Image 1 (cartoon, one colour):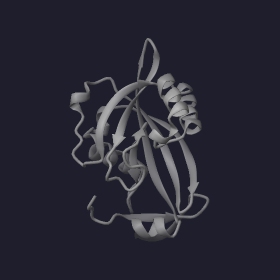
Image 2 (cartoon, helix red, strand yellow; image 1 turned 90 degrees about the vertical axis):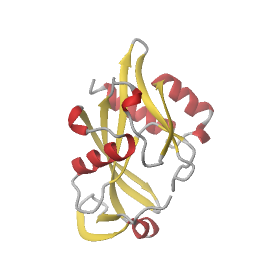
Image 3 (tube, helix red, strand yellow; image 1 turned 90 degrees about the horizontal axis):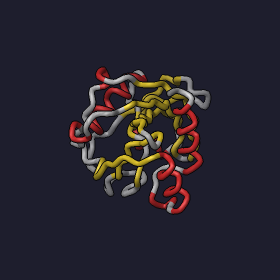
Image 4 (tube, helix red, strand yellow; image 1 turned 135 degrees about the vertical axis):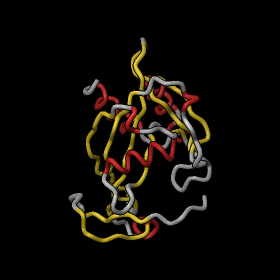
Length: 180
């Protein structure tokens, strides 16, 4: 994907700002700490919780062509976490954050050198028609609803088809259940 280079704020190992701003490519190459947001869209039904999944574009830098349980991305230099959430929801799926109630999750320290990031988790209950979503940035190929039990089973049987791990997803489900 051809994109204008993003600039990111650099953080220390305790998630404190360093005052340094660098291009995303350099932050990743040098294994510098930075921030991201992950937003999990869910709905409740008689079978329990369902999550909105998306198939990542084959052109994505990380986890191309894999199913993902979350939307989100990097918090750009100078942005607050809330501004990052707003921009990611708008860019990836065309949602205006002000129309929905976000549930705060926790910060996760994700240390997978050279990608080292602090990720703020959010949950968004989405009961609208999927036709209202807009996928204009070329990052999403397909979306579908799937129960959390079916996702866990698929991750267990076919882990190579997923952008996240079974253990990580189980932690997300537990976190969400404590909030709804």
